[in-house]
Image (tube, rainbow, N blue to C red; front, top):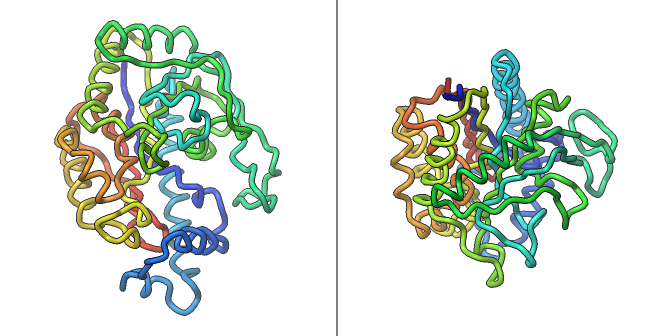
Length: 323
């Protein structure tokens, strides 16, 4: 039976950038919504310096939380790091849009700093900095085969095409903190959390129930193995610009706090009952990545490392550990 370590984290692009630049993301996102109305909490957080004071605090807390999770990961020394993250029309485009896809190649690269404007990252690394990860090809193929035989129609890919940044940002961004050296074999699992938000040609995201079932099937496979596997759920929770109940202007704090208590108390399986409409209304699309991880880990109480619920960040961010 495999030994498991669980990690829950965010992958929002701002986690890689200096807090002095976070306002750019806000301005770009807010401009998309012609009916945008800043909620009172956002106005308070923006203060008289366009949010810089709050951004400095939040950025430091994000870095500190990742350090705690990195230390735990490296002390635990896994044989495989499985990162569950959503692809947002990056590696998967209109010619191939699977609900779930396991990467079955033997190596993969990521270029998280490729963006207009050059060295816009807290390490001041070159734009073309490449992160390379070896992948557990045989292990991932065995997992794929087990899932299919267990009734999960799992797609697989041994090569990433369609995006010149390599790994989708949901996979690579947390790894810049957790394992930038590529010490541990990486197994990416891509999920279509974006769904119909991307337009009418994009298929609906999988249901919460199905995501939990995928996690349970992965667990059944892992119970036949003896590797040490770190399961990383990579996502923010509600996004202000996707929370339709709040006119796409505010994080759904009430809903996310309720979900957080379920995770904290080891009742994460209850999230499998969420409907597509609930996810759409609250902007919690990406929590599906966590629901897969919860299906793998089971109803085990989480150690909450940090919670960021500032509206200035555009999303509700949770850092957590299991095991």
